Image 1 (cartoon, rainbow, N blue to C red):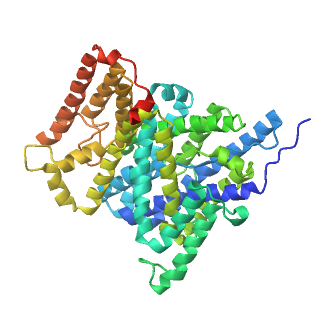
Image 2: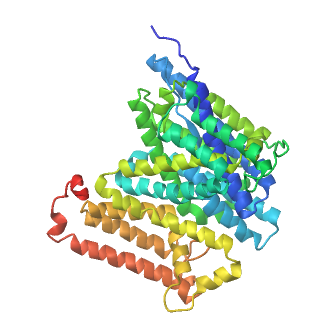
Amino acid sequence: MTRRYQWFSVGDINGFFGLMFDNMTVLSFLAGILIAGFGFPSEIVYKRMFPGTAFGVLVGDLIYTWMAFRLAKKTGNPRVTAMPLGLDTPSTIGIALAVLGPAFLSLKTRMAVEEAALMTWYIGMATMVMIGVIKVLLSFCGGWVQRIVPRAGLLGSLAGIGLALLAFMPLTDIFGMPLVGLISLGLILTTLVARIRLPGNVSGVLVAVAAGTALYYLLGPLGFVSGYQPLPPLDLHFGLPTPTLLFVNGLGEALQYLPLAVPFAILTVVGGINVTESARVASDSYKTRDILLTEAVATLAAGICGGVAQSTPYIGQPAYKRMGARAGYTLITGLFVGLGGIFGFAGAIVEMIPRAVLAPILIFVALDIMVQATFACPRRHAPAVIFSYLPTVARLLAIKYSIFIPAAAFAGLLAGHGREIPEVLVTLALGNGFILTGMLWGAFLAELIDRRLRRSAIYLGILAVFTFFGVIHSVLPGGDLYLPWQLSTALERAVPYQFAAAYLALAMLFLALSFTRGAREPLPDDRDQTE
């Protein structure tokens, strides 16, 4: 006899707070990066970007909730836990820093601020639509991508984002308000990293956010919190996520960001495969293709309705299952985030809760990503994982250069004065296309470590081709693609020609070495690497 599905339990309450605050944290940093970091008009962020972005979460969580009911009915298991879905943290911050912000700064030089902000919104929408289409296609071949690209490349490039963008940047927010930020961080580390339960098994995320926010508004008026702002008036930014073709206006500009869109899509698809497998181990056997298609549909829905951040299934379905959550937490989260974007209370919460209080959640996410990248790969691939971090560090430096160095001075640094390629130009080139670069760097080094030198040479050949046309290592500040012979200066042309030639030379070296006796020797045991 089939038992009735127990779709809601006390565990769903804790599950809701955890999943909801994850999404609100991502929205907070999206708004903070654009408004505080790049001077983006807040009205465009809250009334245009937020509704569609939140709508994608609503669509995805509703479908995953329905899938949990369907699986419970099919298996007769009354304790099926829904797959958690929310905004993808690495790509949201990466797109804000590498696509939306730079695009806005570039457009602002030739049009009015409001017009530049709207055009940037169109570019963000178009980028989401491109990612959604790529994810639909990859949902049918995600397993092949996972098999062909070494895990060190896939996870290492993501861990690089965790280190440079998800950990370092929020850390500056935490220590910008240390009394508030460190208390919140300590509670997050206690409950989520050390896994020490609080009295009454209260959600650690809820307590960290509540305690940090209370301290901010209690200590701020006393002068103990730098940059304190009084509680803002409740301002609900209403915006309806109506399907629109406005993204077509941004497609031309968005194509230059395709080298970012493709890796972000691949990483969430591979992540979807991994989290589906972890749910299966925890006794909830969802179909991988259904999980992947749902996140693709949610991303497309967001992009078409004005969203600028993609949705993805979250790691940790077994953790939600252990806390007793069923399908109620995804249903409530989807409704809360989706309606919050439409009626504006999501934006109001983002304005009310200090970033220093939400930043520790991103620190935890970053730690989780880096730990997974380190331990999910063979120990011998650790150098490949770490090597793939470096392009993201270069991208972070390039972002800081472009924000804090005046445009004229930045152009002068790019031009250089000696015979060598100037350091700032090298940094800019290394950072452009950083996700794809990190994947390919991690992949070629992992194959080299495994003594598959010919495969390593293939990845180096791909790097050479991509470099030559600016898919990665673009010499232009906006990361645009180009035909290298059409670049305006000899110094600009030096980057694609010399970088590509260097990759090809290294590929030929590896091909030659593949015929040597040393390349055919058996791999040393992983344990020997630490002795």
